[in-house]
Length: 172
Image 1 (cartoon, rainbow, N blue to C red):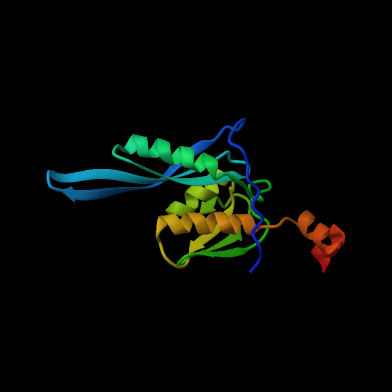
Image 2 (cartoon, rainbow, N blue to C red):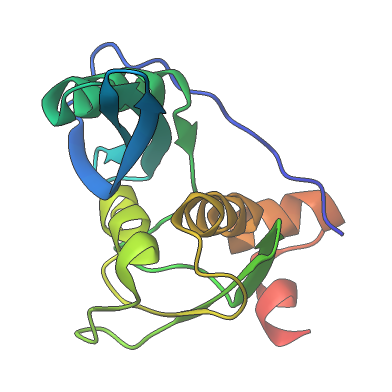
């Protein structure tokens, strides 16, 4: 398995947009009745290759979204996206969630399910075909999608690592 190069990014000086992936209502039964709280998964990104995810828990939905945003700002990573496309096909696994990302032709749009769609759109990917193969648990699908994006390598990086020219990368 390839090692994931994590490029952490600071949230300051970035215009980040957030998307709520999932809101889960949790009921705790006490002597006085049921107490409800909310757990929210939030994805933030700048649409240009920076994306992060976070989990917020609170008694109110809006508070849990705010906490999730704050947590996501602490987990920002840089991913390899050029001109709204991914450089190559990539498979990744996190827990029981498995995801497959494939580059799509220009104008195809984001063909992906809910949790993956939020991550891909926040990262700035505009043309991709994505499939969730394993568990549909949104926590793990989000983490597997971000892992797949981090495993992407562009041709320039490959050429530097192998010590060859770009023509040799493309023509074998």
